[in-house]
Length: 301
Image: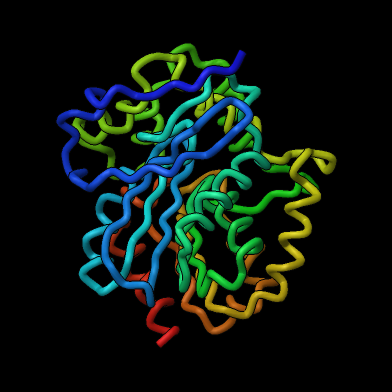
């Protein structure tokens, strides 16, 4: 039986740099009511920025993005994917699938009636976010990607990913904060590490974090492979601004940006950059990421 786990508010007490109002959207799922938590700051409907996190972090990773973007006149939306952050968790790994995540986040997105959206997606924020873009093309105006992809399983994900996948399934103590620290070049202060561990008071809350690496399509017949191929066909016709800012030191996604810049029309005439940072670029180069978002939104004036 799959149960829905809710964090105790005390799990997040004392977290620094995260004083934003809580918002929740309730999904009616086969397991019961599943809440998605999100931050919604700023009042502009002309420019909306959707910041999607990946694995094993949560919206906290965007704490250095929100205020600068709001001060630039934007509405900033930062959800926690189900199983992460302040969103509800499911007790069984089998309850999480790539396609369920796409469906859940589509439901959430459409309920908010967002328009004029710029997506910033990193890690799973890209795998899920790009599917949202393709499914809601009238709502999205531009895309900024970092250290992510849209795998179909037709090509090998590489040794670095396979090593991470094996580690994620075999390590006894899945320490989210330590993993994120290891994916940076600048390191993290202890209070930041503690914030990343906060959503996981015990191992029962970590089922999504454990399962995510297993959901990446790595074979051509993966359950999500065909849908991702269809998404690629749509992206080959995407002419709106599409900017890539990947990291030199990301062993998994280094060079993957070329798979987008070569085929997505919106990548033409964009100032794609290679940033100094590890996988979690939001920690290593937050200012550069914010600049990239502002760059594409200014093209929409």
